[in-house]
Amino acid sequence: MLARLLPVFLFFIAALVSAPATAQEVIRGCATNGRSAWIDAYQAGHIKPIPKSLDVKFVPVHLTLVGDDNGAGYADPLTVLQSFELLNEDFAKINVRFYIDNDIDYLNSTLYYDHDFSTGADLMSNFNRPNTVNSYIVGNPAGACGYYSGRGDGIALGINCISPGERTWSHEVGHFFGLPHTFYGWESKDKISNVDAFDKPAPTTLNFNGRTVEVERVDGSNCEDAADGFCDTAPDYLPERWRCNSLGIYPDSLLDPDSTRFAVSAENIMSYAYDGCVESFSPSQITAMNTNLGGRVGLESRTTPTFTAARAEDVTLLSPAQNETVQFSDSMQLVWNSVPNADFYLVQLHISQNFNGSVFTSFFTSDTSAVVTDILNPNTRYYWRVRPVNRYDVSGSFSDIQRFRNGAYTTATVDPELDAGITISPNPASAQGQLTVRGTGIKSGGELTLQLIDPSGRIIADQPRRRVGDHFTASLPVAGLPAGLYFVRLRLDDRLVTRRIVITP
Image (tube, one colour):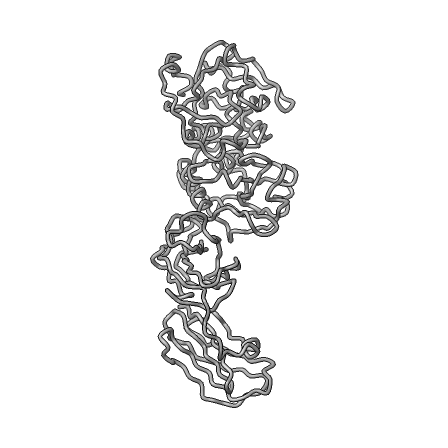
């Protein structure tokens, strides 16, 4: 390993160019401490190792995005997908692929959004799904970037620690599969400034969590019994987030108990080096994780799925139509088509066509329509787009951008009382069916005229005029119509109602 091979003089000629700082720079790293009973048994030889599989193992992840009681503060969904892609990139090296199990859940809870360990364990106890890697993205996971809870058997991740390039998720999944920190035992020192190994030899043992932990020597003589117990991970005494230099090492050297000066390598994902420095697990760690996975009955998918990434070019944005001016409302229904291979969709609405800065609203849904309930401004142009996502392959891109104006229709001839008594269903409607129009509590009834109109204003269906009473039911055929936006115009004597209808394939 690098830490065992670098000559001391490299410390004096290395350019101290650090990896880029991240949000984790001001947040404590991983809050997972100690060793599990499983890793103790495994490294004691009581569990037979299972080497890396030649075939890809598919493992489900139950993903929950946590916001506060008001539904604010959620992680950016696009960032979540990018972080999930990086997780799979790291674990592709060990033939494990994670996929998103069922729907992505949203949870409004200030209690869980900013929680301590005890509350986090309650969160997992209440909302975990069986046989999945339960992952919760919250505002503040016990003051850290993330942690794995053995009590809750779940992972909590901080919103500020899952940006592209950050490996917090991979680190915590390493804990999920039994790995301790590479610097195990030194957690007792809390900070690098408390590590007494820079100017004099490190102690031979440390006391941590009621255990006596051997300090690992550079010559590897005690590697099976010291620190994390893996001989192919280099000695690491650094219990705090740290920058690497251009050589991928800590910019200062340490002394082991034998007075051997060494460099701390930054490559291992289970270290506390910044994310721009870490890149991989060691072969022994990989075998341990595969063994742990093999012992988790029901976690691995029993079948090998076939899947294809969903394509943005297959998305058709149906409503609001391009350049449509809609009747003013503080909410808006967005409708698009069902996309092949898409299990859910990432929807974004913004006031900028470049989607720069903070996106007005961004969320996941498994439906092909969604009501944006954020307060929309009148006479304002909005832009929206949809990204289809496959649960096994979350890569992809967004659809073309469509715009609409939240303005005002001329409503002088629209009767509010009649409008309140009319329902039209289903909406969206399939092009293989029909629309049902119902009137309830219509005072005195009248002569009913019912028309279906396309966006160009052409009448494509027209029901004969008939007399109706206070309650009525009527239908309009839509079979064979192209997918898109239409209007139902209902006239009862001199009163008028117009509704937008979306037809899907």
